[in-house]
Amino acid sequence: MECSYINMYFYSPKGTKNANRIVKMENLTKAYHIPVLLNESMEGLDVHPSGVYVDVTFGGGGHSRAILERLGDEGRLYGFDQDADTELYIPNDSRFVFVRSNFRFLYNFMRYHKVAGKVDGLLADLGVSSHHFDEQERGFSFRFDGQLDMRMNTRSERTAAGVLNTYTEEALADMLYLYGELKQARPLASLLVRTRERKKLETIADLLEAVSPYTGKDKEKKFLAQLFQSLRIEVNDEMRALKEMLSQTLLTLKPGGRLVVITYHSLEDRLVKNFLKTGNFEGKTEQDFYGNIQTPFRLINHKVITPSDEEVARNPRSRSAKLRIAEVIKTT
Image (cartoon, rainbow, N blue to C red):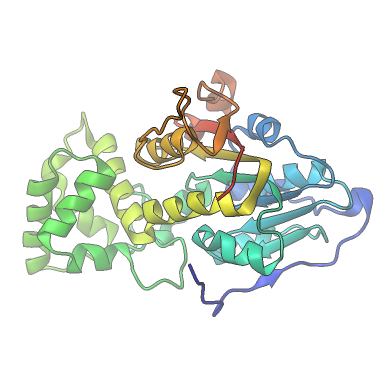
């Protein structure tokens, strides 16, 4: 896969030594995103002081700062994020390189930096940052009114309003069923098409009014969460980007390198689980002559890791998180 470098850039500020190396931005980070399963993911990543690591979901930098705290002077960390807002959280550290890009271009950038196939560990926290849910103008939450946007990358042209007002009824139904797992996808898509014929769906209020026949008090939050999830995944092409990134980990990580992934809904967790177990997204197993499953990974945790009750109480948005860890045993 080739990548256009237009509107993408690297950031590697000069840092200071030792205790002053990392900018103290804990309050800013909390405002953006509380890192989920932090201790468990760091244990799974097994950071070596001189290692090379990648955080493909930099966000507010919580996980990245934890990695930097474990790295020595010779270590290196690359952080990916496509959201311009995350640049506020870039640590002033010479060991850190920021890549403003979608993680689907992982291999191209690692090849550019001459570390492809040499990376000791890669972390992916696939959750949507609290920042996105809490910023009214970004349009990620049904708790606020605002424009139907939902773009992680504000330079992208596709918005939630664009999807709702231009997709065919069949395409909308497929999106609602596949990405929102909504059983009423087809009648809901038909309702949305009829509604937009009278008035374009441009704001969250417009959408909530249109789908009001489906939002009884007993199921409103769950239904709207599924609806908004389907739109967000479609707008940001999340599932395809995830597949592309995971596939490229085998070109990026070295043998023995760790892949640490935190998922938040069944669609992405199924992809990650299948990929780590079998090396493909369908979960199809291939066996050798002795019946051993052929896979490029060795699972570190056979049982999925979830947040403790204490973490969920402290950060309710962590409640659906699932952590999976694997080690590369062969590369492509």
